[in-house]
Image 1 (cartoon, helix red, strand yellow):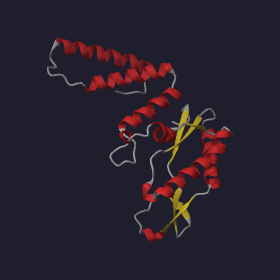
Image 2 (cartoon, helix red, strand yellow):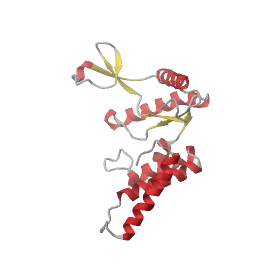
Image 3 (tube, helix red, strand yellow):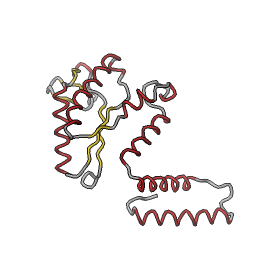
Image 4 (cartoon, rainbow, N blue to C red):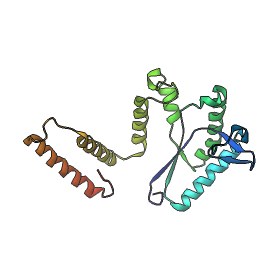
Length: 201
């Protein structure tokens, strides 16, 4: 929960919002109403900054020691239009900069990693908008290296190893070799859950 979390990651996707015309309020979804009930507009840098400042304040009230990390999604919102997507991302960056320099948030460059380091088409999915699995893994590895200590990284690898072992399907489950494999796997799980009792395999 947020009360015990060390980190909170917040990813921004777009500065475009939809307004429900009857109330003049921003909505999260269309509520299955016709499009003519809504208007689209770009949030100002001030609006974005005020909202993010308020989020940071509320999170700190819940957990004063929580570390707030913000990212901008590298996924382009091309349904808004190519130019509109660029304007939106620029608006987010401009609003974020004062919050990062003032210490409200730290910044993880997921956007830059995909667009600047992974510029080849193989790093994009078939829709040429979303990152490919290879790109996701690359960005994840950079995030882990930035925010997770070495000991925890070792535990993560151990948990991954156990998960892979649980998915293993032997040709002959009755062999002595497989029974020994199951005993060793059970021992690994017991040792791991003693350290992390909240994790269930």
